[in-house]
Image (tube, rainbow over all chains, first blue to last red; front, side, top):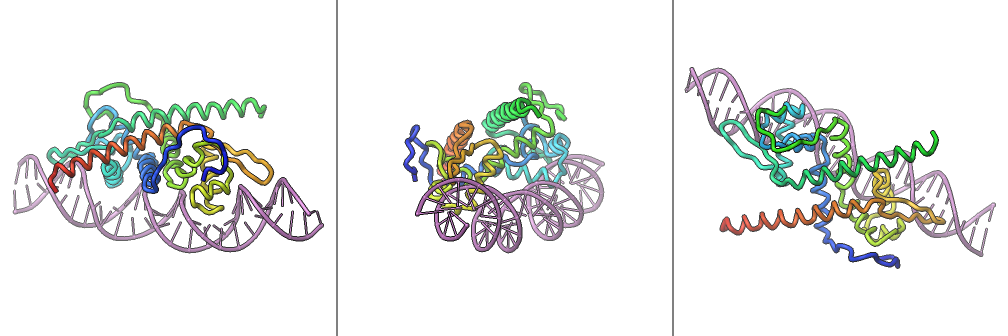
Length: 120
Length: 120
DNA sequence: TGACAAGATAACTATATAGCTATATATTCA
DNA sequence: TGAATATATAGCTATATAGTTATCTTGTCA
């Protein structure tokens, strides 16, 4: 398992189920429309209609993706008349996305610099 | 776009490409074997053979997933003789996974409490 | 040079899912 | 009650990809 290489520190010991759970969580965020929906909810609750307009998705598709986010516990739903108001249940997702944004920015910039320095 | 609801704060303004990039990044982490591979690299560089043993994946599949991680810039590759040593290029992924672990733990615990309190 | 070993890749199959259309459900209002 | 509206869902198709087997490439060593 450790392949005779010295350790740097304590490695997180994860169960089989934990690997699946982590991957499953990331899968929820692995869709552009779902990221759009979360971003559209940044300022507070929105109806499905509103989210359709904000994201450009059609009604059925937006509903389906909201269902995925709801099942993952990332958004909440509140019914009011014929409307359904969705909101971000866990602002944690925003910090995650921000970190990824920052990382991507730095990564792409570094690659661009490498490319420039290569002289092409 | 804002659907006449008051704002909480400045919402990150993202381009179309940014949504795709964020989702694409998360997609790289949305596979259990790739999470296993990253975890197996926690203590330092490992060969493909070693990673096969550590994760239980077969050679071709491990190679393929390492390729995905490599293309995403999450791991590095170093050739030495007939061996290829892979390592984590960006420790950022570990902090991401840890955060997700913590969040899942808290989330599942909260759900369990709700269930207990419901009296079932 | 030939045999062997490590790794990468091509080609295939099976599965998952994004997006679509059509329909169902539920609420409001005339 | 019936019409209209908002949302959810069922069913379909097309695409992406995880896992597998077989093959190719490259480096080592006799």
